[in-house]
Amino acid sequence: MTAPVGIFDSGVGGLSVAREIRRELPSEHLLYVADTAYVPYGDRSEDEVRERTLRIGEWMQGQGAKVFVVACNTASGAALEALRERLTIPVIGLEPAIKPAVRDSPSGRVGVMATTGTCGSARLQRLVDNYGNGATVVRQPCPGLADMVEDGVLAGPELDARMAEYVAPLRAADVDTVVLGCTHYVFVREAIQKALPGVKLLDSSTAIARRTRQILEEANSLASDGPGSVRIFTTADPAGAERIVHRLWGEPEAVQRVEI
Ligand code: DGL
Image (tube, rainbow, N blue to C red):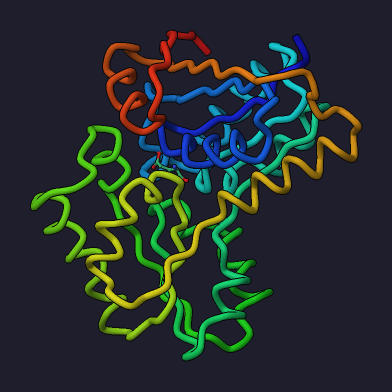
């Protein structure tokens, strides 16, 4: 078997990225780690998130992964530079899609929904400084939203009520485009769209899948031998994770526990 593509998130949110990678590169073997024992990352310190991300990166490299995709904005913001220093395999990080949002926003008023960690990160600030181009960029932390996705709350009145609170400042700022700056939020896109009618929603998952292809092509290490496979690991109770993984992934996948 050819070397796997390692993909990781604090929980199941990164499956939204894994899904796009699977679509783009169906022959690749995917190795996914959900650090469920430590979710949510968004409420943890940068140091703690960096520490976990480095450990998981080293584990992936030890498993023979040929690339490490950090399918988590919060972990990318906290640990990308450190990972690139520590690992010898290529590291692909995620960042909120500020650049295309600002470029395509007719009104120049853009929102970002993300974790508290990402909203306060130097990395997001750099993106706004570099690509903000005079636009108004409203940062909206959504504490608790990733947890709802982990708990399988993907629709319904409880989610709608919470969503109305999150989006109120974005509506007041009259944004026409909102960046989904957390991979979990892709799975509640419909609820976000319902709360923000007419607003364009952007995420980075297809761009990351294309970037993964590009990196593997450049390294001449694309898999070419038939259908790929998916192995999913969690650092917490696999029974709990399996229920939500089945719903989000859409095909039954066994979830194995791993100590990292
Ligand atoms: N999915 C993660 C992200 O993209 C964060 C969720 C969390 O653990 O707080 O930022």
